[in-house]
Length: 434
Image (cartoon, rainbow, N blue to C red):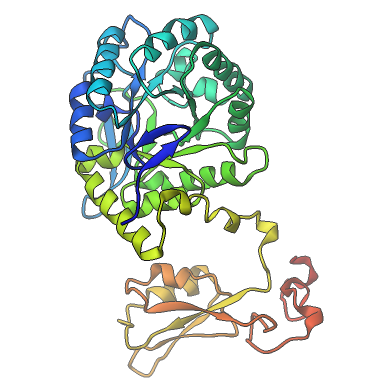
């Protein structure tokens, strides 16, 4: 059996699945139930100094649902913990004493000055917690108070606050980054300069979930008004994967440990984050939607996959996919694939034809002899794979690679002097495409 035990920046846990700082980790009752279900660790919901935060008492969440009410995206306007600091600290201390093998990281957010960090960090350290996560990513409510994303969007502030934290605690320091920025590498590099032990990402994306066209108010609505919130859930996973990969592969941040967050619902999602450089993962929305026991499927699924692939430990595949991520200019322009339609699987719906004819390259023909038969026109197919994505039948349309040295338009052999398609005389764009 594969060994799922994890050691992330010196913090040990029985598996790499942690609950992210969020409503599921806001009190001892929740955290104990999570540990009973099998979670390897938690990041306690973000603490601030007293007096406690006041949250709204109306709707805090909004959801983007699919046709079958499957959750696609999730939005929240909830702030950091609204429980007294002392109560949280006592509960953290008690839970850590009862569950010494589980990781407890404490998320924290205070003003962007050294004194508050000097006050709160020793109190957190006294609980026996395993580390702290600096919440520099929350995009709503706290950012208007010059905390959260207001700090995380400015690399100089990220470096400064990281230095504050490192000066006033011996615990490992994780910097939680905001995705509401042009290039995630800049704040990550700043965190590294400030001495961060790791970064975690992504925090939520600033968003409005929709508009009630009867009341003309966005949602969730509080007394006829709304405010932007943080977007998360399965829809943000591709954004999170890209940012994790950027930090893992860029020379400025290479080697900086990463805790991956963003739309993780299954073991496969987790494995993808780890393959792109994350040392472990944090989950929130999936636990809120499906409950804590979802971790059982994650543990079983990851373990079975590792056994199948021959991975003994999670460290064996962390970062394995990073070399496969490159800048666009380094992609092989001589690599060619073309689509193929399996006529035995085709249900004659025509979605591929409509998509290709209206919005792509007019590379699919349809017979007009009374029986619709859709075929790929190889001479026009550019291998964009739009047809495979719109086809409702799995494996009905597949992509097939052509050997190097063949004409991307016809499949015929071409001279080696024209191996770069951008210089091929049959390229309709001429030598301008490089």
